Image (cartoon, rainbow, N blue to C red; front, side, top):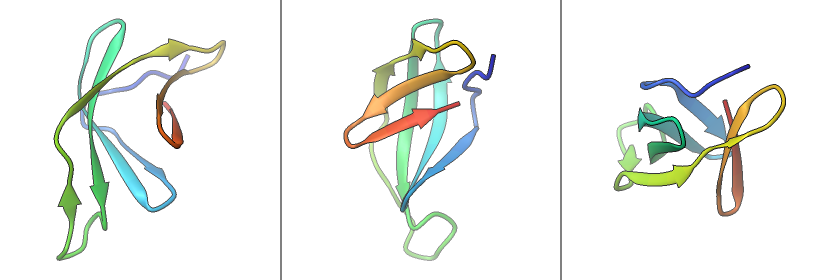
Length: 68
């Protein structure tokens, strides 16, 4: 099963999600706009519940569905 790991970056559309921490049931992350550019913009750290699907972990951030 694919799992979220601290430091992992996941690209969804124009936003990159960087995992900053996790527990068994939750994940902490920051949203990064314009990742790797001079005008990179990071959001405040957020916390969401992890859902376990048969082959991977997932969490929902409106309007994104972020998969490990």
